[in-house]
Image (cartoon, rainbow, N blue to C red; front, side, top):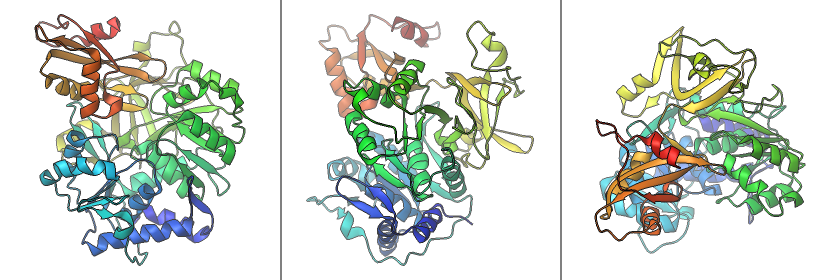
Length: 519
C-alpha cells in the first residue's frame, strides 16, 4: 500500500523546521505546510469529498497548489490539474470527463468555471481571494484535519492530467500512486548524490504539467529541499531568485533557456550555486545550450518523458556522463527499446549522436517504447486507446511513445522526430485540429490548416494558413485576437498567412508538409 503523500509526511517527520516553500512574502516550513495540507483534507471531509472523488486544481505556481494537491491525496481523492491559461471551452471537457466535484482557482478564473458548471459535476468552487459569488474562500475551506493519510493501493489513481491524442480530444491519463511515487523518487536522484535539505529548487515549470509536478515539486518535497515557486515565467525574475537565494537546482524547457541567454544583462548574473540545470519538454538547440554554458558555470542536462510516463524515462546525469544531443540513459527502474513496425528491436549504433552522413537513419531508427513502474495505468474510460498504446511481451507492458529515435551501445537514446502530429511550442503540446476547429467557427474563414514551423526560441511556432470567404475583410491581427479570446495563449497562431487554397491530396487531405516547407 502506498499513498504519494506519505513520502511528504516522512519529510515532515524528519525535517519539520526546514523551509518547504519559499515565496516573496512567506516561508512555509514542512510543519506549516503539513498543517495546511491536513486542513484542506479536513475541508474535503466536511463536505463529503473522499476516496476517488476528483478535485480540479486550476492554479498557477502558488503554495496553495501544493496544499490542494497533497490535501486531496491525503483524503484519498484524485487530482485533476488544469492549465490556468485555459478558458471555458477548454476546461469544460476536463471537468465533465473527470467528474470533478471541487475546483480550486483564482478569483479571475471563477467566471470560466461558472460558465460551464451546470454541465459538470462541480459542487464547490474554492477561490484564493474573496469574490461576490457563491464560491468559498480558500482560508475558510480549510478545516480541522486529523493528519491521517487515506490508505491507497499501489495501482489506485492519484492524478488524472489530460493530454491530446490522435483525435485531438484531450484524454485523461490515469497515473497511480506507484507511478508518481516511483518517478518522484527517481527524479530526486537525477542530481549527483540526490536532493537533500541543503538543496533549493527554482519552480518555474508549471505545476499543472507533469514535469513541474513530479520532478520539481514532489522530487524536492520528498527529500526535504526548499521549493521556490514562481507563478509566471520572467527570465529576469528567475535569474535574480537563483542568484540572490543561491538556488542549487533549476529545470526548464528550451524556450526558457533561450530567454535567459538573450537577456541584455545575462552575463551579469551569478549562477555558480547551480549544481544541476535540467531541460525537457523538447530538444534544446545545441547553440542555446552552448551559449548558456559559456555564460554560467553550469551544465545543462537533457532529459525525456511524457505525461503517460509520470514523466521521466531518460536523463543525462552528472553521474552517467553526458552526450549533447541525447536524451540520456534510462532512469532507475525504467526499460526502453527502439523497435520497428513489427516490434523487432533495432540494433544500437556504436556511439551517438550520428551525423547525417554517418548512417542511413531509416536503418537504425524506430519507435521508442518504454516500460516501468512509472508508466500509466491507461486512458480514463478509453479502453481502445489504452490497448493501442501498449504491447505486452517478454513479461513487460511496453508503452508506445510515438517518438522516433535510435540508441547507441552505451545506452544513450536519441530522438529524431515525432510520430504524432503534434506541435511542441515552448514545452507545451498543441494539437492542430483544436485550433483549426476554432478557426472554422469564424465567419470569415472558409478553410484553414495549422502547422508547426521551426522556431529557435520555442522549438516550434504555431502558424495558421487561412482561406478567407470571398470578399471577407479580415486581418491576421483579428484572427490572433479571436484565438486569444477563446483558447490558451500558447496555442494561438503567432503567424497567420492568407492563401487562395490549401494543398490537398485527391482524397481531400491537407498536405501539411508543403505548408511547413513554405514556412
